[in-house]
Length: 215
Image (cartoon, rainbow, N blue to C red; front, side, top):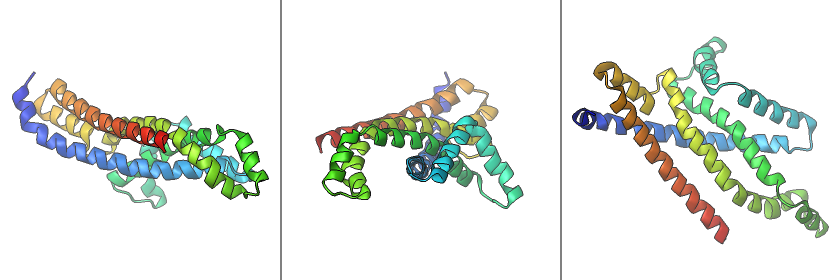
């Protein structure tokens, strides 16, 4: 193992890791927005919204994320959508993980005992009040861990944006392999930095989960 080489290039990997963190945070935020809207559509009383939500989940989960990125980045200009690689990565991965978050959020909401909903309505609460004061607080506690799993998968999935030339960890490793011919060292550094990011994220999710149990 060429330790000297690794010490020379690690500052560039740290810079790439920061890009990965930024990409992950922005994508997670967009994913939560898409997931919340998707879950709302799937749970709607209106058939059209339920169909839209179901179609979104089925299409996104049924096609490879890499193909979705290619359609957005390379195919977008054909229909007037001009995005740089980073923007396409955030939107593509955000919409993709949003489909999985849709089912996570929906699952947490429908798992709440219907008896509590009926009791709240009996007490005179409106449908919205019941959802906001009874269902949502409990569902949010239940969805913390599963959403954490989604976000961990998302962080690892950011490696896909190397295919559209976003200079994150995987792309940086590939670039230095081309000039150093040291794939083991380059991918090892990339993998270790991914592991650190995921470990920190996992600790944050555990803290939030424990905090939610106390409240």
